Image 1 (cartoon, rainbow, N blue to C red):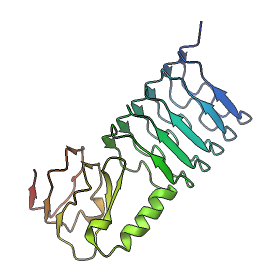
Image 2 (cartoon, one colour; image 1 turned 45 degrees about the vertical axis):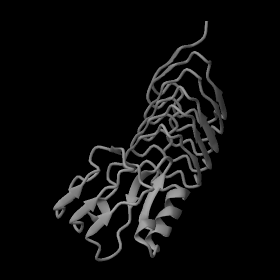
Image 3 (spheres, one colour; image 1 turned 30 degrees about the vertical axis):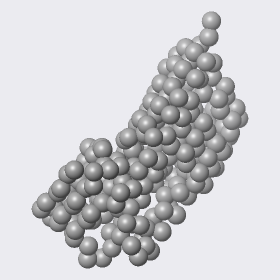
Length: 219
């Protein structure tokens, strides 16, 4: 009989742990199972796992790559936060939700492969990653407004970087999903927004706090 459940912080702060292989029937994990395992660099997760809980690999600084199976539908809050050596992320088709700060401060993460099934990316999910830092720099220096929209995966808009003086927005065709906090940097400036018919999902708090927004056009 295989282990099917692993409780919260079961291996937390096992600072000598370098590898972990979970049995195929381990479908339930508690919060922070490998929290603080700073030498962990090889992991094989269960193919039955549905939810990757909050803080699962928080502070696992040696982890360089991770592949999530199609069974995983959600990646929890701060699941990989502080994994400073993580360079590659592959998420299989089936995952729909990436929660707050999931990959925050993964400083070397630049190769991110998300499936079309991901339709909800929470605020700060990729803050501090090499990919986001580079994307932010390009957006800030972009001459065309359409290049100031930072998207990932299947047109998930996670950040709009406004040019000085912009008050009216017309979203480009590349945007299909609007994430929470995408417009927080221009919350006090934008007066009107026109959304193209390519957009199929507007997530919670997408336009929250936009004090001067007077009109919005939905497809």
